[in-house]
Length: 459
Image 1 (cartoon, one colour):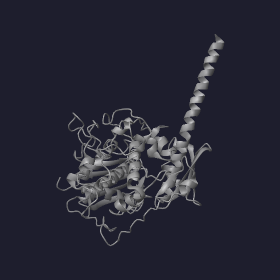
Image 2: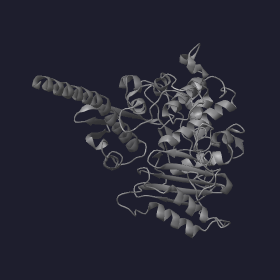
Image 3: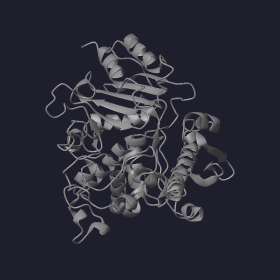
């Protein structure tokens, strides 16, 4: 009996060791990859000090297990955990940083991406056409508004740090107030994380306007052709997070989402390789994988003009002169997560949607696109998601219980990890940008909205 007991204990220990080794084998490269990529981007794109990034972005467990360093000799950054699972990210001017995954660094550096240059805006013209700013608005109580901004930065609970880095308020097309944390200036590009998904929405809209995509037809992927059941998936399904594809949007450890972002060369192809778990339009499930499938479709559709299409047709057209959307190792922009821009430039993108896709009299997005994007999907039962934009509609069967109760039901937003937001309020002709680095629940977005709306004199 004792021998049997010992044998059972031995087997259990071996199983735990094997499971633990397997988990670490999957987890450590994700930790080191996350660290290398983010250190690279924050240093070379945002021009921040390495020690600031290591202490802030990479200072919490489990990222704190890693060792991270910058190598200025080849514009790169490294990450490792316990001296193993070493990963490298490289910086290339104009397109930011790319994590080396599955293919060699030489192959990545050898890509001819031909990124157009950003245009230069005149300092003599008022924002958003130029860089000059006049903080004046007769329709707002600016003193009350500045107090709202002060409160957005004020740390009142050491256990729940807000870590606000920027707030920009735009009313009637002009900046009426803005504030930045120490170390973050007007010209500091900041990572939008999943706000990038709304950029991807715009790229699809532009291709729809060009007559090159129909969002209600089968998504044009060769791997989903013929009798493949995924052929029923449309771009509309992908935009509304209702594709039915198997996916695990979990960032607490190894998952399909973290594997895609930190271990895969071609993120869109990886996400597209999963089978159907539900029928299209049967269930809403938030998936960064579907955003990168769309990004791959955008690249295939735009063809050789892909980089010019993104930069000259969108960024340069509306003067987002700081915008950097970073590609994966295959050269496709990571449409789910990797866009950097100054808070002012994020506000410009919000203005484009506030103005129904028209910029300075020129229609950039097709008629009806903004309404489509900002209308809650029937599959999102909480009334909180449209087409790669979050909505503030009342949940099904729960009138008045919307996510931001102080804001109107027609408000919609771009939301990103760690508290990135661009709120678009059509009824008030307003865009509000908030950037930061906080855990969920540490920042009261509804209070920011309530205070800002209260500063409107007509209220």
